[in-house]
Length: 374
Image 1 (cartoon, rainbow, N blue to C red):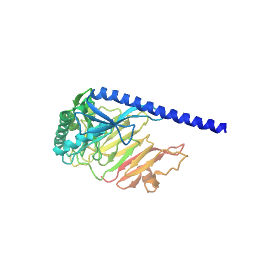
Image 2 (cartoon, rainbow, N blue to C red; image 1 turned 135 degrees about the horizontal axis):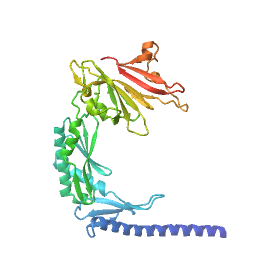
Image 3 (cartoon, rainbow, N blue to C red; image 1 turned 180 degrees about the horizontal axis):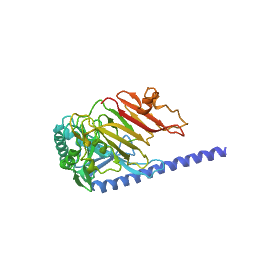
Image 4 (tube, rainbow, N blue to C red; image 1 turned 90 degrees about the vertical axis):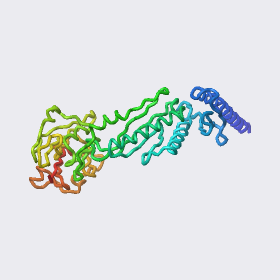
C-alpha cells in the first residue's frame, strides 16, 4: 500500500513541476517577446494580447497599421534553442501586394511573396516589353516604401525579378532568368537599374531562329545542346571552357557553304565531373558564314556518367549493384552490325548514335552523335 502511495505522490510532484515549468516558461516567453517587439518596432508602438485560441501565442497590432494583426510566440523544438517566431513577414508582405494590385494594373505579370522575398514574374518577348514590367516592379517598390515603411525598416523589401520568354544564346528553349532587383539592408534600399539588366542581356539575345528539328542531348548535369539547332557560338554559353584555342582567332574564321569546321573541345568547369565535348560545326547555308554562326552537326562526349538523348535518359556507368540497360536498348534501336554502323553509328531519328564501350570493363567511355540529314 505504501508503494502505491509513494508512486501516486511522485506522479503529483512531477505533474506539479511540469505545471510550474509551463507557467515559468509562459512568463519568461512573454518578457522575451516584449523585449523583441520593443527592439524591432519600438516601445509603445504596438498593442499585444494573448491569443484566446492558443495561450502560447500572442496577437500584435502595430499602431501605425491597426488593421493588420500578426501572431508571435516563442518556438520550442527538440534539440534546438528556443527562438521567437512571428508571421509578421507574411501578413504585411501579402497585404502590401494586395493593396498595390488593387490600385495598379500589372496585366499578366505575377507578384507574390514567398518565404523570404517578393517575386515579380513576367513573360516577355523583347527587352522593350521587359522595360514595361520593370517599371511596374519599381512602382511596387516605391509603393511599399511610402505605404509600408516598416517593411523597409525590417529589411524585408527584397524583390526578385523572374523573366520568362526571352531566349538567350546557349538556350535550347526559353528558360527563366532571375535577377535580384531590390535588396534592403539596415533600412537602405539598393535597386538594380533597368540599364544594368539590359546591358547584361542584350549581348546574349539569340538572334538566330532555333531549328526545331535539332536533337537535344545533355551530358551529366550540364546544359542541353541541340545537334542541328545550336550554333558554334551557343557552345560558349553552356558553362563549358574551350580548350587550346584563342577565341579572337576563331572569330575570324569564315566557312564556305557546306564546309565543315575543325574539331573543338569544350570541357566541364566542374572539378567533380570531368566531361569533354568535342564539337564540329558546318555551314548549312548557301552563302559564306562565320564559324560562330555555323551549326553544330557532330558531338563526341567523353567522361560523362549519364546522358539524355532526345527525351531518353541513359546511364553510361555500369554498376553491378543495379540493373544496367544497354544504351541502344534504351533508345529502342539495334546495336551496330555493319561496318558503316560500327564506324558512323546507328540511325536514330535524324542523327547517328555510336556508344563505345571500355575494353576492360562494362560501361560506355565515349558517345558520338552526328546529324544525318543536312
